[in-house]
Image (cartoon, rainbow, N blue to C red; front, side, top):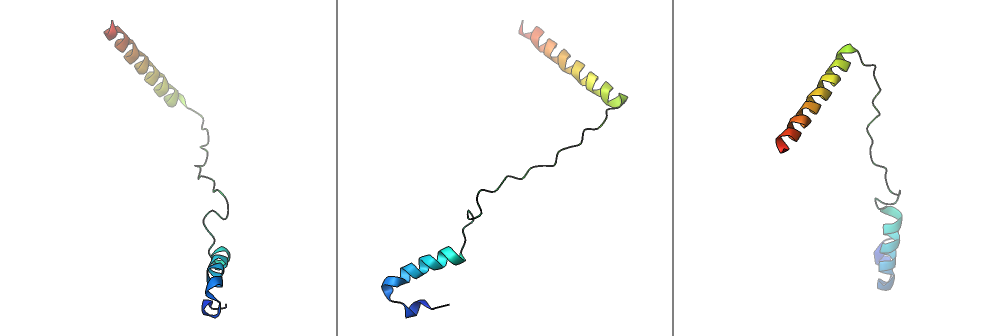
Length: 73
């Protein structure tokens, strides 16, 4: 590598610009990076307990909505 002291002052800034472009690659040099994504979850088969739990949760939600609607009146 050639030292900057051997160049004239007018060429010093040109040398710095060349050195920055060739040795210090900016973080955007490779382009935009893709965001990280979580792996997709596998769908599992639901057994009777899972189905019963979901039905119970739906009924509780519907009942809460009905109570809220009756309280408005």
